[in-house]
Length: 405
Ligand SMILES: Cc1ncc(COP(=O)(O)O)c(C=O)c1O
Image (cartoon, rainbow, N blue to C red; front, top):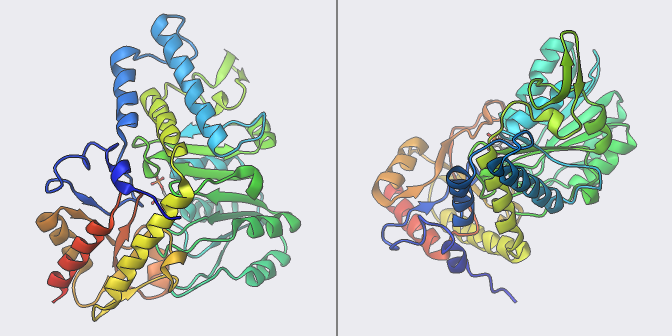
């Protein structure tokens, strides 16, 4: 029985629960979601009640911060189902997590990193730079704009050529919304001796991503796309890597002792979190995941798909608009990305915002190389979250009709 109620969710968000006429229609969730009150309250409480660093301050504020940072980490470990002995590392964002992993794996000249050609720049540039710095070969498997399904046979063919050390791949595309069969991809990669790094930036906000079930070796995601504070991310790695890796960043907090020519590193995860951290952000991240854990994600995702169907159907009646990605809305998660015919998408985006407080995103969505390769013009992207409603979609479609006329 479908009974997800977005109105109940909206009450948790300050800017959505005010007078309906003043509330924005926020459709830029793939960039960043809004933050529930539980998150902003946790952040304010840190600054008002115990602004201090964790682990090293033996005073009351420090003790509270240490406890809350520990709880936040545990909350996220549990959410992604870390094995005993594994623990996530807090970072700034998905981009930083991928860069750290790229620089901590022991790559040698001639090793192959395999991605798709549809990755976000953040899962493309680290490999491009590794190619320049260490002569690592960087291969991209094609996913064309109209691709309906990931081609596992083609993937197997590339793997069987050998030398693939790492498959670094997205879970859900921020451009077409296509979702990849990660369990099958990981199984094939492992059978062929390759490790797997999952870019879960667009998956974590919508699904439970279980690291044990998927058996991925590494994962990167951002909390700001999952109802959490801005500038917060996570790096996950299996225990063997956490224990053996030499950190990419080094400094205070990451060691237990130093001499002028040596040091004793802290245990993971602390050895990777050097210098004073964004404690307010960490505690707010725990609050975001706690909030997300209370939502029935299956029902919430079914709600997103219903909105995506409503949007896709509505837009299909407009002359000159063309959706990119899988033809069926149910295969595009919360993403509806389309060319705006002879209207400039940047102009449409601006007008939607100025006239109706409808916030969308125009451009190439950090996929410059993919847009170049397939000769595509910039698009307008609507990306949905659990608090969006059918009424908002109706208003958007009506406004689009006026603008496109
Ligand atoms: C699939 C994907 N990967 C990586 C990123 C980069 O995330 P961040 O800017 O939070 O590091 C994004 C951001 O939109 C994304 O959609």
